[in-house]
Amino acid sequence: MYSEKVMDHFSNPRNVGEIDDANGVGQVGNAKCGDIMKMYLKIEDNIVVDAKFKTFGCGAAVATSSMATELVKGKTVEEAMKITNKAVAEALDGLPPAKMHCSNLAEEAIAAALEDYRRRNGLASDESVDCTGCCNSCGHSHGREEDFEDED
Ligand code: FES
Image (tube, rainbow, N blue to C red; front, side, top):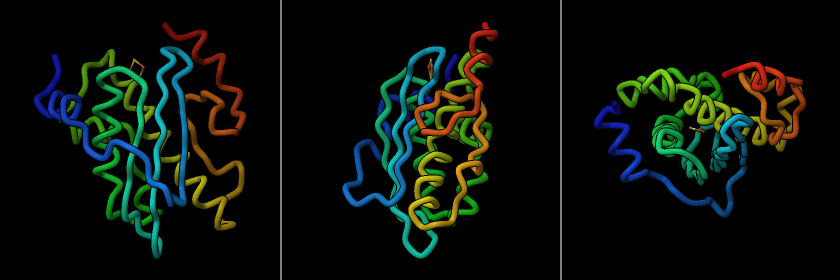
């Protein structure tokens, strides 16, 4: 069911923890399953030099968080903003369809951390996060909660 890479990143997640002097921090949650992911980024000269995460969630959420931190490191802020949940899932050699939503958390956690960085540096407006399924924990209100109620 799960690829070897998913099992590897689940059993041996990379970059778990916090960054004390992170300058971009984002927390997102999945309103449906209740899982929570917190992403810490250290950005210097517009490059993500370090990334760590803490995830309270399912195995796929842990694996996608781990891979997301690996993907984001070394990227410019602009490149990091383009990392999609599909890219994270592909880097893990795929996820079962029923677990693709777990990778949304990784995309949104990166986006929320980058938004925090941009806001701290006067680069972002509150409207610039393009969230795909809102948990409201990033502080923005996208009015998307009803999307989850309709899903099954
Ligand atoms: Fe909630 Fe995977 S079941 S993120």
